Structures are given as structure tokens and as C-alpha cells.
Image (tube, rainbow, N blue to C red; front, side, top):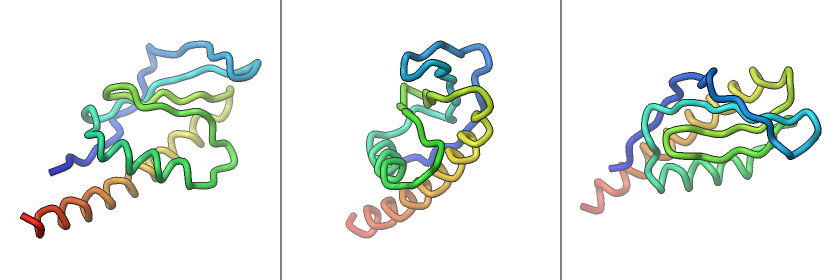
Length: 103
């Protein structure tokens, strides 16, 4: 059974310069747990296939998502990530149902 994940909040103590572009920096979004590899695969697939005008580099590191951004874009990224997490959790629920039926 793959666990669903929630966003706990932004780690305000963890902000760092990023070399992607001149004003780039990274912030970290705290998750409820370290995601299962299947959750990560579903999330990243959805992330890569979703159009978002401000989509920047994003990686999952343990129980955090590292987001590269520019000043003023933070809220848009959080809103975008909340939607991705919600949609990924729906896919995980479906995945879990299929696995339960197989057993």
C-alpha cells in the first residue's frame, strides 16, 4: 500500500542561492513523510507533463521538495505543488485499489 502525502508547509529556515539563472534561489516544501518510490514516479510524471507558465526545476529530497524560483513567484509554486500533490494522491488511491484487487 502506497501512502498518500500532504504538504506540511515551507521550511522558512532553508533557503539557498541556485545557479539556474541570475535571481534564482531554492526553497524547500516540507512533506508529511518521505514518499514511496511509486508516489514519486507518479508525481514526477504528472509534474513533467503539466503545463505551468512558471514551472522551474524541482526535485524531491527525502521528505522535502526543493523548488527553484525567483523572487515573487513563491505563492504560485506552492499553489501549483498543492494541486500536483492532490492529483498524485488520487492516482495513488487508484493504484492501491488495483493492487488490493490483485491480492
